[in-house]
Image 1 (cartoon, rainbow, N blue to C red):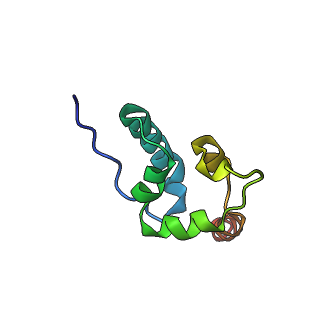
Image 2 (cartoon, rainbow, N blue to C red):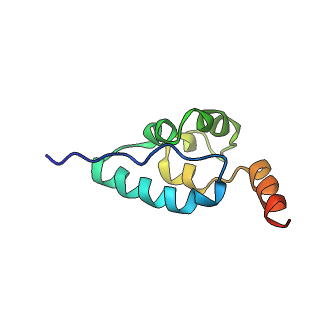
Length: 86
């Protein structure tokens, strides 16, 4: 069985790397058949705080990988867009 290395932890100080990191993680997740708990682990300890701040529409959505990946952290998005406008 082949061994796949996960992507390095997400660099929260450079949020513009998110699309590339997400794509690498998605390939890794499919190859290893992982679920959402590993996403939080792979992103690093800062991800736990962010994940806890997300609000889901229906009970159980926090367990669905696709629902998690659709969520946006509004506070983070606003702060990041302000720094990009400088």
